[in-house]
Image 1: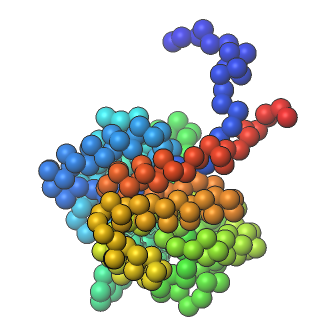
Image 2: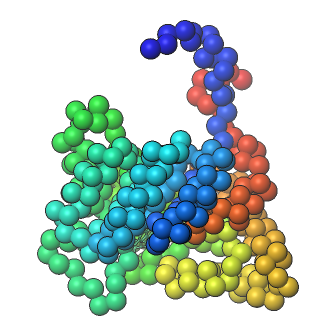
Length: 313
Ligand code: FAD
């Protein structure tokens, strides 16, 4: 073991400012060909030095092999840290226990605890975990059991937060109560659902802080370049993109023009949200690096760097 580094050297070389958190969402490949393309995307994203990449899943719906494939690739062949999404619906509690152990065994230390979307007509079984909060508790229980093998380390647990009311929630206040409960259960941070208007994110921030939530609420952004993708996302999340943005994308002359419009829109939105104090940005990439990199190129994240503790003024 090398012991040549001295404290004064560390102090000289340590960064004194931290840029906002940066992360990307990826979904597992559906075929070997798309996995090859995905590896290429990961390589491009890695070059931007993100804090982690998140790997989506539908845990109870048969894509675990592909989730593990991408997670293992990230762990073994890149310098990146994976945050693996874990959904409770569709799996029994016992199956989730097995999956959590399997992920920890592979070296995963970040989990996004989600309920998952309920498939049409889905009736929750008795042994199914019905909400994200008890899933957070289950992960913390397993973490406690394994403290020795984790070398006392903690698992970082993220949860979802909703700038717009969750489609099944009666009110945004109910959403806030759910977020409070997820924090009390042991969540460390939250990533938001998409939104297209900075005041909507600020509203979430205000409601959460007023209710005592201290979790960092990392805003999720989709590079808004593709109208078909935005429509699919709206169907899934219940969050519709602004009509004038959709219209401008639809009448754009070509893909180059669409990309310019969408990247500009996303950069403006991210700028307003970072100005309002957001702790970072999480880009839903749809496994395409080009637009995500465009957004990043235009953002200059260093502008929002904050001083690290102990920096002298
Ligand atoms: P919960 O926090 O459990 O909330 C679900 C609903 O139940 C809400 O309406 C809430 O108000 C209500 N509720 C919660 N607790 C209670 C309670 N005690 N009593 C009464 N009502 C309650 N889905 C996937 O399938 N795979 C993914 O990889 C995925 N990734 C995502 C990533 C992000 C950043 C986000 C924001 C969402 C993601 N989703 C994913 C979608 C998510 O699974 C859905 O939005 C789902 O409908 C809710 O999940 P949740 O974890 O927020 O659930």
